[in-house]
Length: 52
Image (tube, rainbow, N blue to C red; front, top):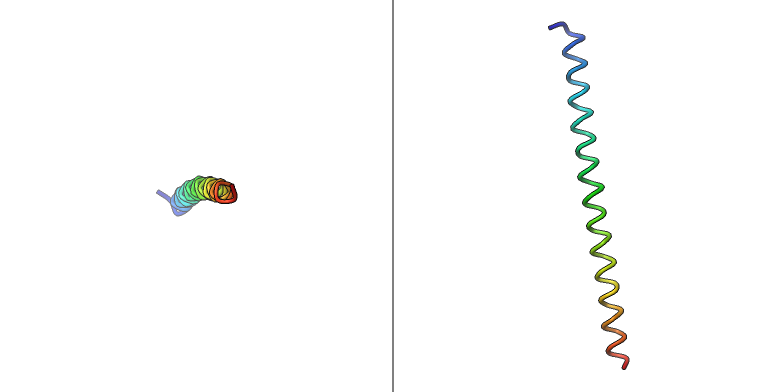
């Protein structure tokens, strides 16, 4: 294998790892956002019940 081939393969692997990491981060942020919305709605319901 030539140096150019090794470099191309290394670049492709680095790109794949980077994209996979981004996908995991995006999914994690989505879950965190959903949890925040659920907690906010729950807090609103508790305040509403306490005000009655």
